[in-house]
Image (cartoon, rainbow, N blue to C red; front, side):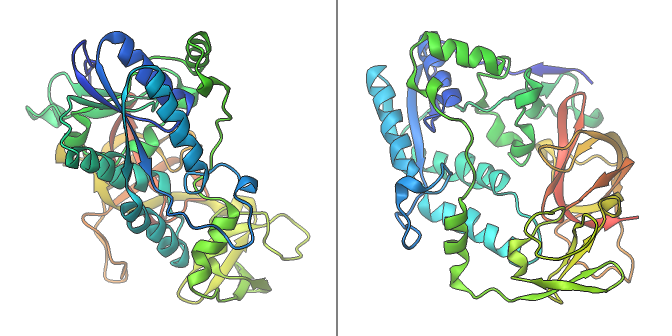
Length: 391
């Protein structure tokens, strides 16, 4: 199928730019300003001012949630002032706590592996943030961010229909591609979203930012969702419940300190003495048990997923042959995606129509709670939340 890349903002367009203080979003705002757009910078305010007990805020590593937000806002404000760009800070604290932090806690306590970045993009960054902009009475033509991705639409309609919804395609710089994190954005939302760095290599971004004298070009890039100190504070509302660690045969190996501290595929910090490498193979929340196994015992031939997002809500009726990713860092693998009809023994409570994804090559550490994202011709055809592994 052929796809057409959507046009970028033109001179005179009113463009909201989501700014974090990093080099990507800062350069995005500058390039759009130079293009002749009326640029309005906005930054999400997520941190509620709380600090872990006995911790110096200057000792905390950079993270999405934390006091470092204040420095980011100051840097964004200075950049916008220096470049005659209107700037606003949008309070999304309530939405972030409810939609991201509480979700994060609930998933881990349920023995699932959350993906807070995907959740944040769908509900906060491309949700509550834009709602806040509209509440200020700001009308805009486009919302732009520094993500590495493209917005496209099918040339001849999707699945034989006349519909040509906005879809997400991978960026030119595959090493920085961020489409996995964006797959849950609706086609309606995408119709007003653009990613000006879609065809720019990361090295070029730094080069352009350095030539422009942007302070953001000197900033350290890595940033976690939440630091360890905040993790402990977030989960302090309820006491952790220790339980057994066993192997696949049910043999007792040790005790865990609470299932929220473990994820599928984890090797470090297990606290067991075994004379061969072991990894978390399963988390049994119902029985409060962690199951460990050898590395090759973490492979799965297939998975069941639900809560699917499809571009334009156009659902493929036939089996789909495509490639899938089960986490951001995984390599795409060929797979068959088909509707799954639960039998009487399957008592899982599904959200919407579940699908079975069968891999051409077995995949390691398939984690319930994570997302499986479907790609074909470098374009996202849809994706859902992993429920469990399958044969």
